[in-house]
Image (cartoon, rainbow, N blue to C red):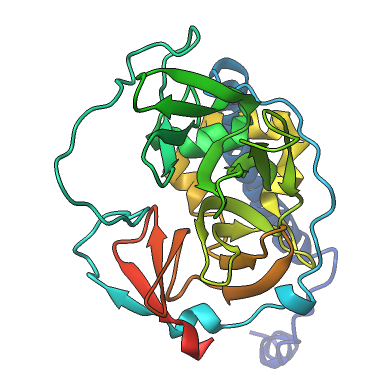
Length: 345
């Protein structure tokens, strides 16, 4: 081996510099390949989810056929309607011993059938008999048939469809005759006679209002609005000791805020899509659990409001029954009653 060869062998190795012309392009190609794989995978996943969804939207039938409804802008929750926590002072009774105690009544004596729901009233059977009120002499019973299409378990479908086949009916206990006082109501619900029995009130739940039917006086046989554009959707109506009325509401029309039912009222196509994809129970999970109790004057003015903004204590309120200085709160979903001392509010 020559001296020159030895020098070449002992020459130190030079540092290897990676340039754009060396191995870097291989790394770039690898990264680009991984990105393409991710994009293709994501696209395939999106297609696999979207196609069945679109197919369901196009092919499945919706259980409801809603028509657009029009509401006024909800009232601002100010003044008498100012949110508070007063309903959270209530105590729960019979917790987990009841299932949806919607209404409260004092029952005594025998129970007998007055009229069957299978009996047609002016050509239509009663499918969803709801609330009632009785004259002091017991001769007349006023009650609501919320729908001749939907049954009680379908209450959310009834609200969302806005079906106008509800009625206010009168039953004569002497003649056994039934007649229709008001027709084409959208979910008529609670019903209550005035203290002097000159008119009867009926809550039209879907429309967030209470209607009045006159039983005597110059307006006998006529009807008008007792109160409209309520801040929530009314259920039952009961007398208050002050001469007005208690109205229970299981959900409100927030303002400021977002009211889902108001938003959907003029968008029936969204309602159809929702009930093609989801059950009533699933949809109910998205309805805010905001409980509201209103006390109205004898002319329909707002006297006071009691709130539970999150439904933490009193949830899904359907009725307010006043007795001996307390309010007893019924619910169509909760497994308990609530009792609230009027002295505390």
